[in-house]
Length: 356
Ligand code: COA
Image (cartoon, rainbow, N blue to C red; front, side):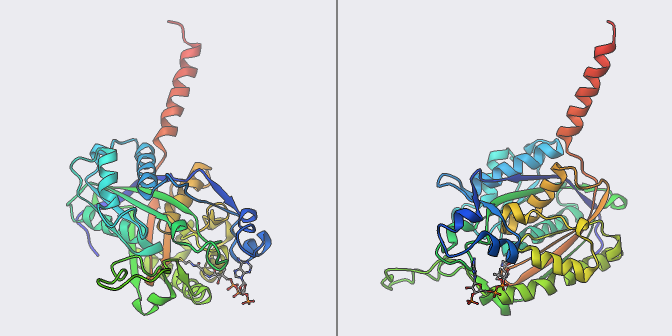
């Protein structure tokens, strides 16, 4: 796909609930153990919202964090896209509320849904608008609060998910400075029944039908089938995007996968010939935060100084729908708060020895 303009990512941010729920905590709710959960998933803990916390609130926090990372104001954003499967309300969209909170006065705003792959779909949509020359700066947020749609008595599912929001800021560049080298999106609705949350849309309540006493509106999953799907989808998506970018898998410095399960991530990395230190993961601390997991994982790795700059990243998502997709991105963004504080420190040091 040829675009008139290039794009790059200039900011990444996160919004996390403060409450940490450990595997040990979950043993009080279901028949499980820290050992089982760690061995099968790699998860030790996850963040879970308190009653007063909302998807919109987390999305706004992530957006503000990404703006601060990029060192820009919300009023410079031209378009807001929020990827979520668990919005606070059917409407207004989460994106409209983020737009108001960050003061992006002139930005059209909308939500989109591609389950856990939502953030990859959203950056691809953002790239199209930038590449065509329609918008110069696009804020993309992924947010999900799965904890409100989990059966806390079902050990098969409640151990897997955490809540959170993550954000990216995309900016237009000249064509020869393009850093978003390729995206790849896929879907297969034949697998829709493998991962879904029933009775959460207009299918229930049916008009004129007496509602049953208890309505099942918890996440349903065929874990084995999703596992099989994911270990094939991730390598395929990485190969497709690298090929479209005109590079080889060997040129990838880091894979930033959707954080669902460390076994899925390692099996996929193995098939691709990627080593452990090329995988960016925080599933141990966060669990599966759905559409938010890729930016949260990258944000955390960058905050810890674990990502060399510049580097070649492959972001790769998979999830309900079924959906999967990837993006090859040359990462050059530096947290502007850090460069600012370095400048201040350098100034203070220079000033300390100087004589007025
Ligand atoms: N604690 C203890 N035992 C548990 C358990 C838990 N939290 N959850 C399930 N079990 C039990 C089951 O009841 C079952 O017992 P049974 O054999 O007596 O019926 C057994 O463990 C299941 O074992 P197995 O099928 O071998 O588990 P697994 O290795 O497939 O791991 C998942 C299960 C869910 C961790 C794994 O299939 C998975 O990660 N799938 C992908 C899920 C995912 O990522 N979803 C989101 C995608 S976006």
